[in-house]
Image 1 (cartoon, helix red, strand yellow):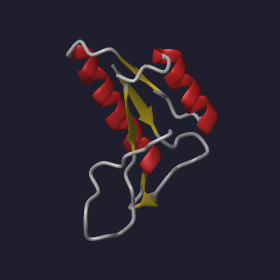
Image 2 (cartoon, helix red, strand yellow; image 1 turned 90 degrees about the vertical axis):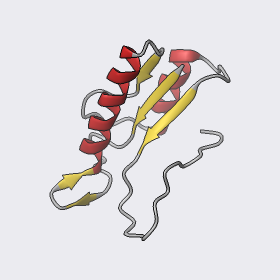
Image 3 (cartoon, helix red, strand yellow; image 1 turned 135 degrees about the vertical axis):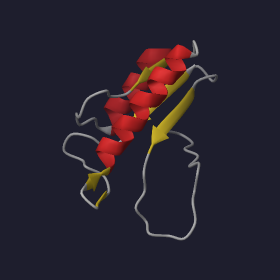
Length: 97
């Protein structure tokens, strides 16, 4: 089971640069992953599929409402960081989401 947590959105654009908004890119990535996982038969839900603002509590509620507190659920939080560093952090582990 998976939970695709599309970050930023609505009033929160996330990182900005080169006429791009992080919220738009994370939404595109999340929609692609959601569609692909569905095609593969993976039970999955998406936090947001439009440009809306969700606070932390709303995100957590959507996760819990979808699958409860099941330890077999994987939550993927989409971010496209604009730190300007020379290295890539492919996975950010979030404990106690």
